[in-house]
Amino acid sequence: MATRRQFSREFKVEAVKLVTERGVGVSQAARDLDVGETVLRRWMRELTQDPQQAFPGKGVMKPEQAEIERLRKEVAKLKMERDILKKAAAYFARESM
Image (cartoon, rainbow, N blue to C red; front, top):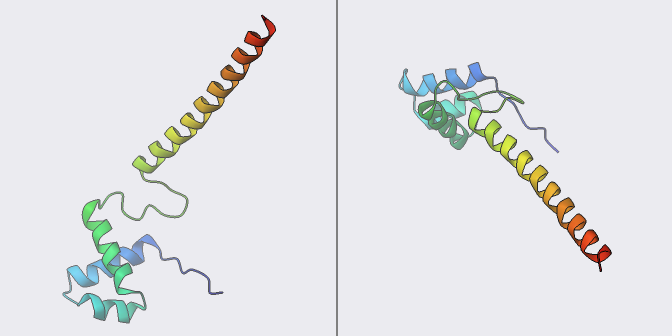
């Protein structure tokens, strides 16, 4: 099984600049850099949409992703607390009869 290649932020930015600033076609730049056209187009889209937060790096999340992860953890905790309270209510309801 082939390992997945990882590219640095600088490489991605330079690849996008090759297309946008130097006028090289996407397909030609992709061939020259040995990356897929769709990958290069995705890098272009990401850099255009949010230049500051594009390509955050390995293990670093965008602020929106970090917020989503935090909220998911909070929801899981609240569900666990709810389930504990349900079990306690059922236990005390049985005990009072």
